[in-house]
Structure formats: C-alpha cells, structure tokens
Amino acid sequence: EAGGGEAVMAYVTNILVLACIYGVLAMSLNLTVGFTGLLNLGHVAFFAIGAYTSALLALAGVPFYASLAAGALAAAAAGYLIGIPTLKLRGDYLAIATLGFAEITRVVLKNWTPVTGGPMGLPGIPRASLLGFRLQTPEAFLALSLAILLLTYLVLQRLVASPFGRVLRGIRDDELAVLALGKETMAFKLRALALGSFLAGMAGALFAHYITFIHPSSFTIGEGILILCMVVLGGMGSNLGAMLGAFILVALPESLRLLGLPGAVAGPLRQLVFGLILVILMVRRPSGLLGGS
Image (cartoon, rainbow, N blue to C red; front, side, top):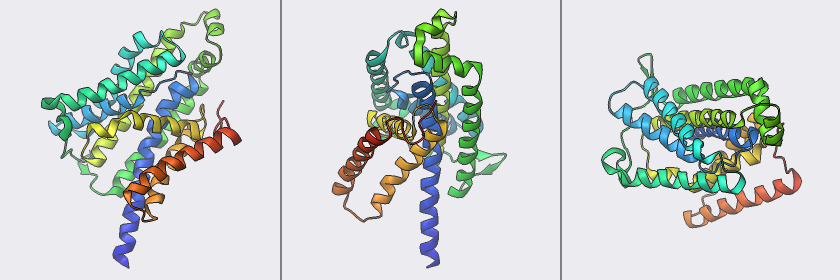
C-alpha cells in the first residue's frame, strides 16, 4: 500500500509539473493572441527553440541557469526576427505564416542531425540544478516550476496593467485608432511577440530539463493547436484563465488514461472530448471560462 501511495503521488506530481510548464506556455501565447490580437499559430516553434538551445548548452556543460536564460533569449530573438516580416500581415495571413514557421522549425530539428540529433532526439539532458543542488526528484522540480509559473503570472499581470499593456489591448481592439494617437504599433507588436517568445523558450527549457529527452515529434503543429486551445478554453485576455486552461487540458488526458482504455481507443476519445469541450464552451461561454479584458 505504501508503494502504491508513493506511485500515485509521483504520478500526480508529474502532472502538476507539466501543468505548470504548460501554464507558462499558455500565458506566453495569451500575451500575443489574447492581449495583442495576433493570430499566432506557430508558438510551438519558440517552445522548441528554447528546449533545444537549453538542452544543447547543458549537454556541453553549461550550468542550468545559464542554459535556461540562453534558451529563453534564443526564442525571443527568433520571435523578433520572424516578427519583422510576418507582423505586416493580418488575420489569416499571419496565422498561415506563423504556422509555416513552426513547421520549418520542426523540419530543421528533424534533419539537422549533427546538432539536434535528428529523428533520434537529444537524450541524457542534465537535470536542473540551482546553487549546487540538483533537482533530482519530481517534488523539487515542482517547486521550481511552480515558482516560475507564479513569477510569470505576476510579471504579466503588472505588464498588462501598465501603459504598455493598454497599448497592446488598443492594438487588439482598434489598431487604426492607436495609430491615430501617434503610437508605432509595429514596435509594440514586435515587443509583445519577443516577450511571448522569451517566455515560451523558458517553458521549453524547463520541459527539456524535466523530461531529460526531447524529440522533434514533441513540437508538432498539433502541439501548437493544443496550446491555443488552452488559451481559448481559459479565456483570451486572462492570464489566470490561460493557467486554468493549461491545467485542465494537461490533466484531462491523464484522467482518461486512468480508465484503462487501450491506446487505440484512448487517443481518439481524448480528441473527441477536447472537441466536445470546445463546442460546449463556444456555445455557453464564447469568451472562455474566465473571459478576459
């Protein structure tokens, strides 16, 4: 019984760690989609860039905190650079461009074998360590990921309440009016995309050091759609809603797994449940569970 209890606790802790990581990821996407109104479907690319950058540096012997920062900065730089040409597009055109960037990133990761390991991925990524203390247990990593989740939430809450955040919401609601007030909207959108990419890269670095193995199949377009679903479910324009959506959509597949269904049934059933939840949500609460500002 004691062994069974420990297994259950480890299982629950694993779900909570992943929920925290995806909570950071969902809030980072919410900054661009929910607050700025940029239909970004390629956010998973920045998640991947952060994960691979941090993993490669850690495998080369770089300390965890430095590799984490480098992964986040690499993702931010990629977001800024890809934003220069794509943010001139609007609506569906922007969505298609960012979707293409995500697929290009995945293909590069899959085929740049000497650096990324290609289809074999990157195994043996060192676990996180802080101040000489290696976070070997899921409980220790949960404390770290929860702290980063709360810090991200507090920073974003302050940001969206600042004049910068009010300009972002103005761009979302009426970009022409913001332009008429003399604001350079392109610069604000680039900053929002770079900051969102920075946070996505940080989430990717956490993911890599927790799982200790990353593979291009972990960063598919389907994963990007899942992140967007978290934002939509929780409520676009709500950081708390993005966290709630992440926790629900991370925990839901695991709850279905507890039913003991075979994989051939559990996979399609999960997609069916996802679709059903979103349809009901769009009918009953179009703004999401915690519809934002």
